[in-house]
View 1 (cartoon, rainbow, N blue to C red):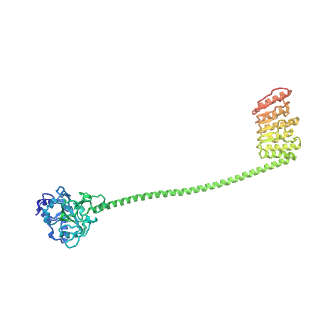
View 2 (cartoon, helix red, strand yellow):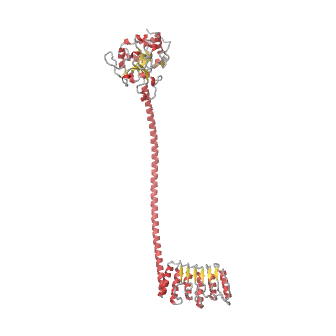
Length: 549
Ligand SMILES: [Zn+2]
């Protein structure tokens, strides 16, 4: 019946050259539990026994395939050049092949091909005796519907694969449930491979695998790009075995499981990241709360400090206001006092003409508004009682002033009594007067009155704390008067630096000049502040003079 070469082809699947028909018969006498289960399923389909050849049944279940050491791939070196993937995990039920299969030596010259089909289509295929293309009229008069091709009429053909992993996919096998098992059917066929395209084409997977699982290989032995065969030559495929699987895991299910694992891992990672982020945010919240508490405390302290500062500021402001008020009060009082003094002094002067002349100066002195006082242009007779009243008022104003620095009485006709009053009441008490010019008052130092006046002037010179310059030029100063000035004034003056006594012709006249010189020398020796002394023309009939201290 079978030719030797055909036998060899089938022996390969059964484990190698050493197996013969007798051993196989023994194997089937005691089939493995998996084979037994699959046979029960086949019986349940009520198929015509005449289509089958039990001598060609093969078990490729994990146990049997392992025991027989069947390789994963076979017919790698056959003359047709197309290896196939051994259907490990499946049980095979041999079909009674048509005579032409032997005549055409399909077990040597045609390649193995797998064709997945629904279990419900098996009876029809067996009745037809071959695979039918969609659109073909079946024996019962119906037309085979187009179940798989989505590409239109040009895609109509018979689909097979050298990979059981591809043929077993759900889209082809449409698995059914039987006694709690998931059952799939694949037909193992021989296929003529030397048919030219487009009648036979080797193509990439057409089941949308790449879109779902990317580059994952469907089979370990055939690339996804060459895993499908499509042919329009329906007589070029001869099924020779029905393969049955129970509860296998397809590549699709494996990839879905991997996806699920990846999803679970990603979810776990997300959960971990979320936990970390949550913990981090909790930590941040803690820090933020601490910061907030610190801020609240700081604000409280700031408010307290602000309140304290405001209180202190208010107190200081009150004090300042009080001080300003006090100062204003003092100023007012002082002003009133000054006004009073001016009024009193003016009342003291009985002559209205003298008063009109002196009043502006008295007022300016008392209110510290002038630095210089000029008696020069005044027409006042200082020898009269009214004149003395005026001098007294002026002297009081000079003593009161803190602004007056220069008093110019040059040639003002000052009397001896007037000078005495001015010196005693004014110059002696002044705290600011620096220069006093009394020159050209020729009657001022005359006689006994003049000596008294000079004594007063000398005492004023000694007691005044500010006077630095005294001018007595052309005053007709006598030797006696000069001695009084030198011994009682110059010698005791704390500040006097410049004294002008020039042009007093009788001052150092012969006879008493010796005593005057001695008095002057003593005065100079004592007064350490005097730097300039003018004595030009201070004597009659002598030339030259003494300059410097
Ligand atoms: Zn087995």
